[in-house]
Image (cartoon, rainbow over all chains, first blue to last red; front, side, top):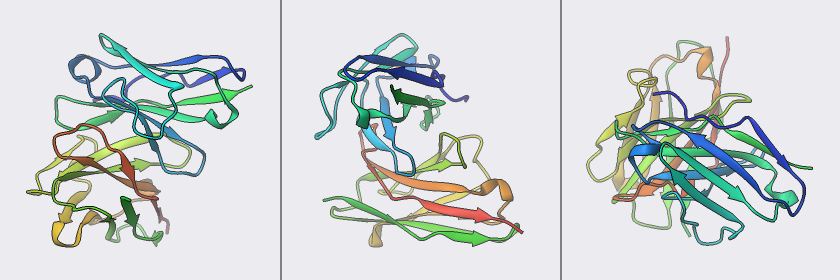
Length: 110
Length: 119
C-alpha cells in the first residue's frame, strides 16, 4: 500500500484558514472513518490532533477540524497562529488491519 | 498521566542485531495496541506494524514484513522492536505509539529512539 497523498506545503498568514488534503483509496481512507491527523514540530514526537475523521482529543484547540468525503480527508486550521507552523501527517486504518501515513505537509505561517 | 518511555539512542554496525524498547506507565497495559513508526532523516512518518498486548497478535506493513520483529511483554508493560541484521538504511528515529483496544487512533507517543547504522 502506498502512502496517502498530501500537498508538500501549505502556507497562510496569521488569522487565516488553511486546509490540508489527504487522498487515499477505498482500501483505506474511503473504507473507514478512522482517519487521524498528527502534528510534528521540528525535532519532536508526533502529536495527535484529530481522530476518527473529525474528533479532537482533549486539550487540542478547536481551531483544528477534520472532515472526509469519499477517498479524501481534510484538516482545516482556522485562525492560523505562529505556533501552528509544523509538519502535519494524516493516517488511516487499512483493509490489511494496519495503518498508513500520508506523505506529510509542511505548514508555514507567513 | 500516561507515559511511554523508549530506550536510548543506539549506534550499530551493518549486520549487527538490535532490540529497542517502549515502556508504558500510568495505566494498565493489557488492553492496548502498540504501534511502531519509522522516520528516516528528513523524511515523513511510516507505520511499520502493531501488536495487541492482550494476545500478541501482530500485523506488519508489507514493506517491513520479515525485516523487523515486533513483540511485547505485558507483564512489564513493554513492547519491543527487533532487527536481526541491521542495514545502513535502518538509520532513523523510531517512535512507539499506543491505542486502546477497540479504538483506531494512537493518542500517546514515546519520545523516539535514534538508531544509527554505520560502518
